[in-house]
Length: 115
Image (cartoon, rainbow, N blue to C red; front, side, top):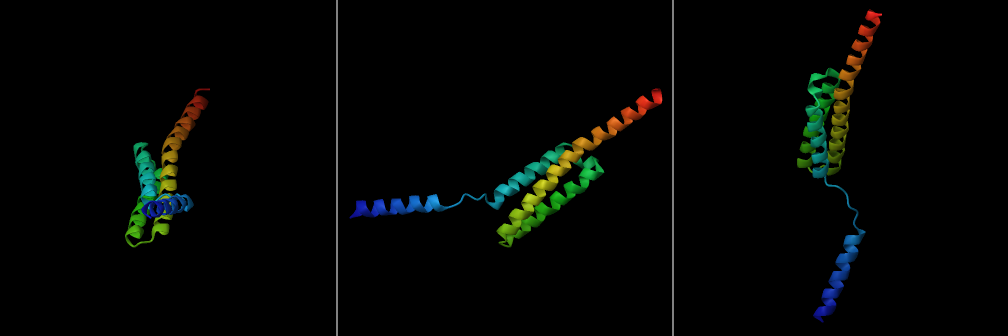
């Protein structure tokens, strides 16, 4: 009797596991958002006004998401973490591109003044 019971439980476990979707937990989204935030900070986003604004948005969204997790609002927390990641990624991109754009404009201005 026991081998049949064990086999039945094993089959139910396999079927149950196969039917579940693998959805990242809010903690995984938190890690991704915080990694993006650190990358933006490392790129100097705080020193570029356009990027600093999005960096602050990301920080606030992470704080909001952590509060929502404590309140049991997992889906809302996930959304906030994803928004934070997007804002941090934008801050990172702006921190890299805006100084280059300014330098290009300055070089072009200097080139024109020499001619």
